Amino acid sequence: MGINRDRPDLWKDDIIHSVDLYNDWFMKFAPKAFRETRVSTASSVERALSNTNYLQNISVELLRNHPEVLPILRMSTCPPIARDRLVGLAGVTKSLVENMENVKNPHVSPRMATARLTSELTKIARIINQMADPDIFIWLSEGRVPTEVEVQRSATIIADRLCGAVADPIIRNAQEKRQLAVITEFLCDRGYREASVGIKYNEMVAGTFSFHTNVPVLVAEGADSTINIPVDVAVLPKAAKDGDFPLLIEAKSAGDFTNVNKRRKEEATKMQQLKNTYGKSVSYSLFLCGYFDSGYLGYEAAEGIDWIWEHRIIDLEQLGI
Image (cartoon, rainbow, N blue to C red; front, side):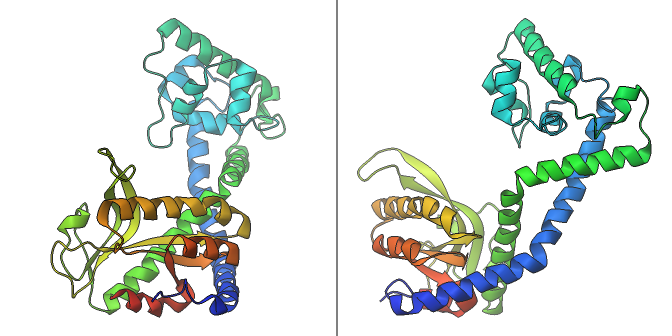
C-alpha cells in the first residue's frame, strides 16, 4: 500500500495546496534570501574592484593570482559577457575560463605552459578593458579615483547582475535549507536525533537521521563497479536494528511546472540503482513542495517512487517513523 502514489484522486487538491505553500514562502522569504546573497556578493565585488585598482589595472598578474574575480569582471562589461561568449571573444581555452570560475576552487590551468597562460590571460584582460561599462564605472573615462559612494553603487549593480544570473540556485538553496529544517523539527519532535557528521549509512543507530548521506550503488544490475549517490535525508527508525538499511528521503522543491519534468528521470535512475543494489524493499521517497503536476507524479508513481507532501508532513509516519 502506497502513501500518495496510488491515490490519484487526491493529486489535484494536493498540487493546489503544494503550489500555494511554495508561493507563500516565496513571497515572504525569497526576497530576503536574495537580498542577503546580494549584500554578500556586493562585498566580494568591492574587494575585486579594489584589487583591480577600480578596473584601472586588470593585469595578467591579477588574473593569475585572483582568478575568482573573473565572473565579476564578466558582469562589469557592456553588455555583460556570458562565459562561453568570453571564450569566443578572447579566443582562449574553455577549460581555462571554467577553472578560473570553479566555485569551490578557482584556479588557472596548472598544466598550461607559462607562455601560453600569459598569452590567454592577456587576451581576457584586453576584452574586459575594452568592454568595461562606462555608465557604471564613470571614473574610467575621467582617469580618476572613484568616490566611496561610486564604488558602493557600482558594486551593488554588479552584484545584482551576478545574483540575477544565479537567482534560481539562490532560491533553491534557501528552499532546501527550509525543507530540511522542517524535516528536522518533525523528527526531533518524535524523539529522533541527528547522527554524527560524516557517519556512513550502514553505521547509523536506531532513532537517528543524517543529511546529505552518500550511498554506494551498482552502476547497473550485475555490474562490479559502484558509484556514490547523495541522498538528502537518511532515517533509521526507532524500531530498526543497528545496521538495518535506513529510509531515504529526497527533498524536492520547484517554482514552476516546466523544470520538474526535465528532472524527473534523476529520481527514477536513483530508485533503479538502489533496487539493483539493495533489493526491491528499499525505501526511497520524495518530500515535495511546489509545482509538481500530475504528469510528474504519474511518472514517479510508475517508477515505484512514493512521496510525502510538505503540507501534509504527517504522512512521514507511514514510513515507520
